[in-house]
Image (cartoon, rainbow, N blue to C red; front, side, top):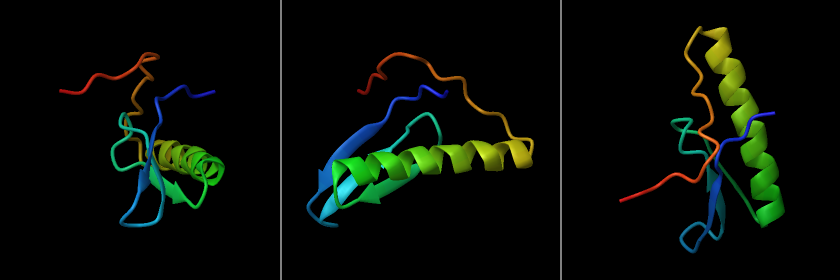
Length: 70
């Protein structure tokens, strides 16, 4: 089980929830509800990792703690 931090917010511009995993560059998803956005980001994470494995790219180890932003 991967334990990456997921950040989710409401986008007024897009009228949906946006979820992302900052430790996996470009790994983002959206949904009309928080539940759908969470399911979609988990699917996106699995695809991100699967694709990285396929191309021999490194997969970041989950930090297991809250990320800090400036």
